[in-house]
Amino acid sequence: MIKGSGHAVQVVSVDEHNDKTSFSLDEKALSKILLRPEIRDKKIVVVSVAGAFRQGKSFLLDFFLKYLRSPNEKDWLGDPDKPLEGFPWRGGSERFTTGILLWSEPFLFTLPSGEEVAVFLMDTQGSFDSTSTVRQCATVFALSTMLSSLQVYNIHGNIQEDHLQHLHLFTEYGRLAMESEAAGTPFQHLLFLVRDWSFPYEYQFGGVGGNKLLDARLKIQPTHQAEHQTVRRHIRSCFSRVSCFLLPHPGLKVATNPTFDGRLSDIDPEFVNELRVFVPTVLSQSSLQVKKINGESINCREWLTYFKAYMEIYQGDTLPEPRSMLEATAEANNLNAIMTCQEYYSEEMNKVNLIYSIVRCHVKLCDLPVVHEISVGTLEIRKTIFLRLRSVRHF
Image (cartoon, rainbow, N blue to C red; front, side, top):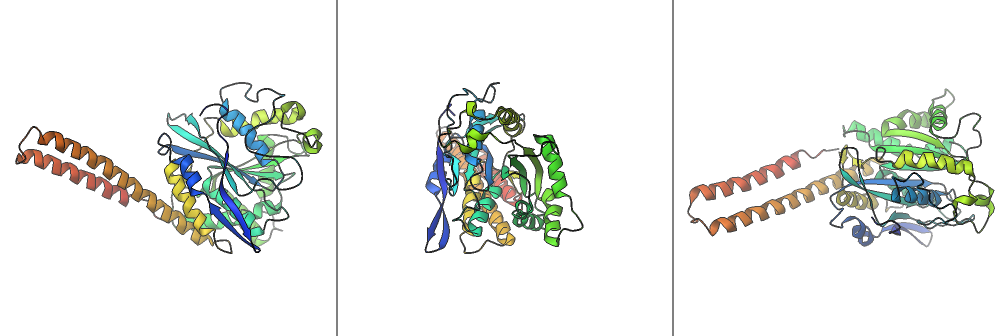
């Protein structure tokens, strides 16, 4: 993408009418982003940030944008006196982001394997503000976790029991998925990002201290209730990787100045130093993870199918059962397999028709060897499609 291009697009909106909440997917906007010819068949990497409201999620994502625009530059943070741009944000105590936003332009990166992938950033509505219901908060968190290859769980101060309990739905889903012998772990990288960490004398800032804190919080204690033990027991088996990073407070100017616009010169140097470490840790080419579902890497077009399938199950008045989540994944998986085979069939038959047209101009139609070769070619196409459909993983 061109440096500086792109904008945040609202792809999931929250509609509130007569005390009832519903979610709507802007399929047209999402399709416009994902189905462009240059990226539709590229593998997709989705980095999401979720967590409580007014804790700096959009603010953090704009630093992600800075890095993705200049990944090979040592000073990727740029001019210290330039205001922060990208995902919309503001200071204050009231909710700002609602629903789910996706950056309109992908960042194309070549992985160490040599494959070029499309990287997208996702912003989510903050949870637990004064107007959001528990279901609304859980739905946004669930959707973003199921759709991302990296979910940054942005929390304030410390890892607490309620933070872990939000993961209960996913651990139950993961248990069902593993019982069905689906390939790999159901989810990928979950990163607890603890903001305003105030105890560096116990656990130092950064990833080393963060992972030590995480190990301590996930350790099962005799005093834990059964459901608390269950979450701790299954969380590491449901996510392919679980990690933690501790960030210091960004400074009083960030917290109390109503005109703060994100410029580095107003941010505490200690925070900036840790930011220089954290962002490349999760976004460098060697760290990026292609989105996988049921153990298979998916492309932009396939991701759109899963997005639509997951939206369907979150339209009720209550949260879906984990079994429904599993069935939606299976249905989207089958739809993607059918679409892939249809495209393959069309492409290969077009080649056969072209060859047939050329041959017809030069040989007699009754030339049996030529007719035989064309028949064999179409048979091979059908066999390939049959084998592809048979190889589709089932849940």
